Amino acid sequence: MDVSTFYALFSATCFTLVGLWWNVIQGHRDWLLDPALRRIVGGIYISFLLPALMGLFAQVGGTETPEIWRASFVVLAVIGCVSMLRLTGRNPDGSSVFLVLAQAVAALFYALIAFVGAKPELADIVGLKPIQTEAVLLILLVVLGHGLVWRFMAGEGRPADED
Image 1: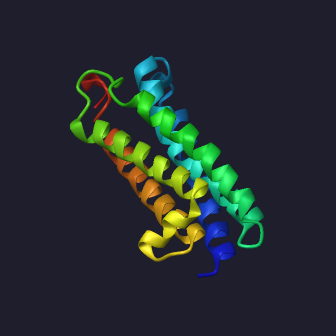
Image 2: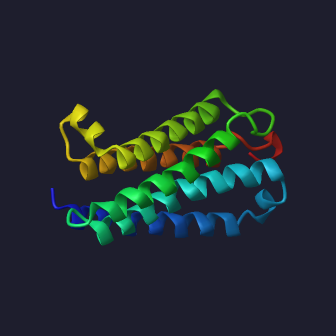
Image 3: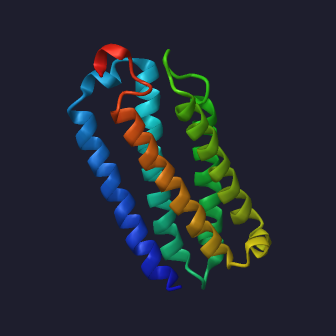
């Protein structure tokens, strides 16, 4: 696995997703007026922004200076985990079980990213290098973010009159 190429493409893709999400929000500024909706919109935003930032730090540190990416992954993953846990159970009325479950799973992925960053030997469990294990977890996190966008855009987690 060419780690540098993977993280370059991954980070660029995540930043593109951040920009696309901004465009969606510009067309729905009313979502930002409701605090509960604003939290969900923000949760989707960070599900693309934090992995993008992790990808940049992985490129800076690479395999030569793993301390850089490991420290940044721990800090950013803790931010992501806390953010997702704050969202869980604070969604607007009518939230689907999927939305709450997706937020809890995202918090779990962030926690795993932080644990592998802090204790890279945990990657031995799956037989990968630590930076590869983190890549797999980040991919899963972004796939989950896509699922959240789809469900949210389909109307779940928003008041019924906005469908």
